[in-house]
Each structure stands twice: as structure tokens, then as C-alpha cells.
Image (cartoon, rainbow, N blue to C red; front, top):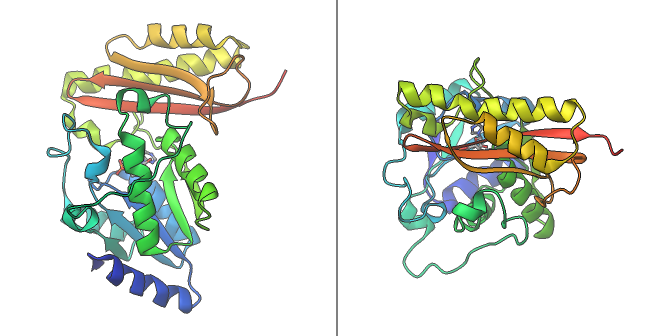
Amino acid sequence: MKVFRTPSEVRAWSLEQRCAGKSVGLVPTMGALHVGHGALMKECAKRDDARIFSLFVNPAQFAPHEDYAHYPRTFDRDCELAAEWGMEAVYCPTAEAMYPEGYTTYVTVEELDQRLCSVTRPHFFRGVATVVTKLFNAVLPNRAYFGQKDAQQCAIIRRMVQDLDFGVEIVAVPTVREPDGLAFSSRNEYLNAADRERALGLSRGLQKGRALIEAGERDPNKVIEAVRQTMNGVEVDYVELVNADTIQPLDVVEGKVLLAVAAKVGKARLIDNIIYEVPQS
Ligand code: AMP
């Protein structure tokens, strides 16, 4: 695995690949890799000739009371797994190099960052958009891969790439789940056995929502209320039904709808969602 620590090192590698006619694929991660990240990397390996992942726990997307200090850091294992999944290089800058003293420039994507995770984590998407901008400017990828599990993040990155003319193709990869429905997440490591059982409340809620929509329910409030009722055992942060591209609330459940949930389970805050294409009536 080639290891790059500075923007100039990684940019030199990327330009060499691109000059040789190769496409460069980037998979941004915060490490503690699991098979969800693996799906993004395998997709990248299918499409791109030169494949790099970034491993950076981004302080700009954590509030002071959140888990930045405790976030799992497993560099050697991550590199081994990523190599198995087809990655040949990793970009892992230090936090001091990314945000040196006096750092002042941040990227915000307006309107899409008003609901869902932004309500309890108002700092979060500014941090994400800023770090993704910095990663794109350093790595100069042709394509970048993101998980549908972070659906609001996908919508925000797509809009940012379009609005700021990045010229990077964004590939969204479906959520990978354990056999019982729990979405893989680095934060699942915080769950004890009882929390792990309770965490199924999220996917149970989404299944209930899907069943209601498939049965013809078109009143967003009725779907949201039923999903909430089904998520017993977890401390619900939000249940929302929005348009998947604009992250705006729906009057009627139709079009490309995103049913998104977030909940606290033990020490972990977990999110999950489904995206559903509902024909216009
Ligand atoms: P993270 O390391 O948690 O920042 O995640 C890095 C990327 O992996 C993001 O684009 C996530 O959406 C994606 N990802 C995380 N969990 C999953 C999953 N269970 N299935 C698919 N993609 C995922």
C-alpha cells in the first residue's frame, strides 16, 4: 500500500496516473473499516484504474462533546483490508496539516443542511463539505465513492460538486447490512450485546415505513408516526420523510423519497435510511 501524507505527494501520484491515461478513484473514509467501506472500494476497483482511499478522522465535523477523541483508529488493519478490496494507495494527512493554526476557509451547502442530521449536529456538514473539498483538491480524482447510508451527505456532496464545478463523478453505493438488518457502521463497535439488539429498532422502523408506503399510504405524517412507534427501545433523534435530492419535506409521499432515521443506542448515535421511488399519482 502506498502511503501519502501531504497534498503535494498525493497530487503528484494522481497526476502521474492521469497522465498515463488512468482514471483515479477515491474512497473517502474515517477508517475503522468494515464491509460497508468494502462495498465502496470494490465498486471503485471495478470502475477505476488507479484506486486510493483516504483515512482521516475529520475534527471539523465533530462538536466538542462528540466522539472525536474516542473514534476507533485501526490504521494497519484498515490498510490490509483496503488492499484486499482493491485499493493501492492511502492518503492520510494529519489534522494539523489539514487545519493548521489560522485556518479560516469553510464550505457550506445551503438549504440541504437544514434538516435531518443538521438539527442536532449543526456543525457537521460544513465540516464534511470542507474536508471533501480539500480531499478532492489534493487527490484530483475522476470519481469518488460515497455510501447511500449517509444519504444527506450524498445529496450535499452531489450539490456541492455541481455548484462548484468540481468535475468529479459521484458514485453512491447501496447500504450494506448485517443479515438481521443492522447497517454496518464504525460506531457499531460502541454497542454492547443488549444495545446491539436494541439497535435493530432503526431497520425495523424503516421496514415498517416501507411496508406502509408499498401498501399505498401517502400521508407523510402517518408514515413518520408509525415508524416512530416501531422504533421502541432506542432514543429517537429524528424520523423524517424528505425528497432525496433536495432534503425538503414532503406534502405527499411521492417521487424520490428518503425515509431517514437517527437514534441514540447506548453510547452510539446511529443513522439509517431507505430511498424509495414512489410513482406520482
Ligand atoms: P465513514 O468512514 O463512516 O465516514 O464512511 C465512509 C464512507 O463509507 C461513507 O461514504 C459512508 O456512507 C460509507 N459507508 C459507511 N457505512 C456503510 C454501509 N453500511 N454501507 C455502505 N456504505 C457505508
